[in-house]
Length: 330
Image: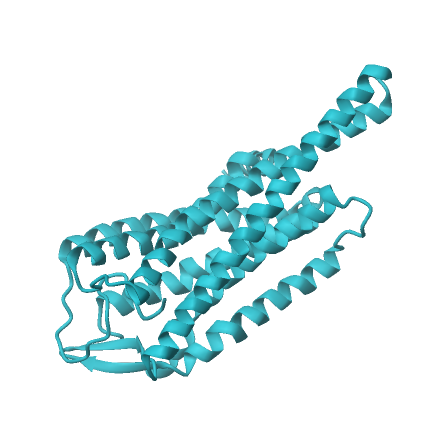
């Protein structure tokens, strides 16, 4: 999907680049908002999880990894795509080859991380007697996710990036050797999206079903024994904690797919359908879907904050410490 820009589409090097000033103004304002909100939210998640020992868990490690990939999208991919689409490329070919393909690397890291979280939660809830991920194993998995993501998409695309003159503009472009390679890449990216979509959907369906069964067993047992027993209370607390965590993860997954699927479907329709990519309607839709794609990196920390009471407590604690330090200094 790198070959489709958020401001204009197609790689016709013989024509001047047309930039819609209204679209540029709207996207500039929205991207500024997304960048600010996402930067604050993701840095907060990373600091809260890393600085509070009671929040140390494999799931939180994966959430921190998701926050790092979101920061990569906001601090590297978003500015690079914005410059690439609307302005003359101010850097050399090497920077074009390094930074622009990172967009799809961060994208793949997010997808793989959400899929790994689904598998990890499935093992904990649906297969409770199987060994769980240790924090060391989780860190190894995270490292593998980054390496595979770069080798699968970032490294190959870097060899296809070129800097070309289009009228008075220097553009960083993805130049395919032929239509076949471009279509294969589009299918590959679509597969990376659709397969994890089915995995996460099936995984969370099984998780929700298993939790309903656990709840029914616990309540049935409560009818035969005293509900004040320590065992019953522990089971209920564990179930409530898992329920809160699954609700948070489900919200993150749903928001992710809402933000990602429209762009994927439009790219497939352009590649294999009869849609004219240069029409104003398609360009407007594409600009909106790309904005939605980048917005996910700001929506994730909001979803985590809303659904995680531990993070909210960490935020209140952080504010209290800051106000205490400020008062002491004054």
